[in-house]
Image (cartoon, rainbow, N blue to C red; front, top):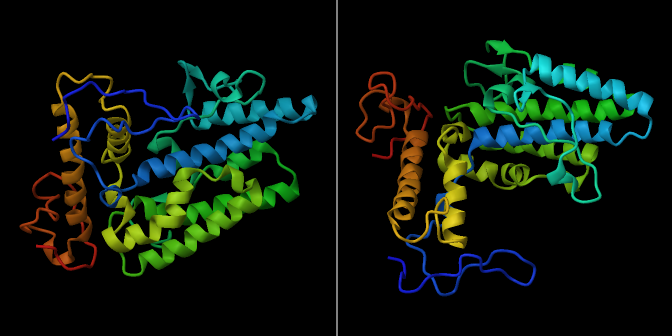
Length: 315
């Protein structure tokens, strides 16, 4: 249990203004890093947002207004039309973002995509395949149409196209829920190719934390826990955010210290969900019906999803 004897300093900061752990408070239940996992859906969404934002920033910073204006208009038409994006209830427009710009800078608004809109940029299939094959019911992505709207030079276009092509190979690994033998090796090759093309096009300084996690830890996560797609849409990002808030500020949604059950419950829920997803991701083909671990219950029971991953059942 945590030490509730004295009120903690919820805003403990170091000399640089960064939040630090309060030395006078013990966590109710610490969540080790070994029991956390990336949400593959949010990983895909955030990478696509970053790629689109980099293109918008490139146009935004053009000095030639005659070249800048029609490109911004074309991008707005694409995002507001083909992507049906809304900003404050009206079709998306490229505007200055006060938060990103700061006092003297000028940075455009960063688009925000849910999984449906992010998926439109890349080809996707209704069936899981390591790479989109001939038998996949593939829906072509809109990234080529987006690049046409950006109207980059031939030299830049070749680099930008290479980034999107490499990302399109990575995406199926983030969506698929069925583990295929050798996925970790294929994913490592795919994410290495994407990272190399991204750095060559946009520079190392624009690498995001999601890109780093996929590049540095993605193959290991697949090897240890099965398909990355098993972990999507499970509130992983939110539970990580809560765990960080509980550890740094010792509160959940600014709920104060009167009732600590919310923190204890969310931490326990996080740990139990981790074990549940591990079972679902590691259950073998023979357990697709009534396996005691519950990992295979999906079509019959109506809960969860059938996970046939070609591994031995953990129970």
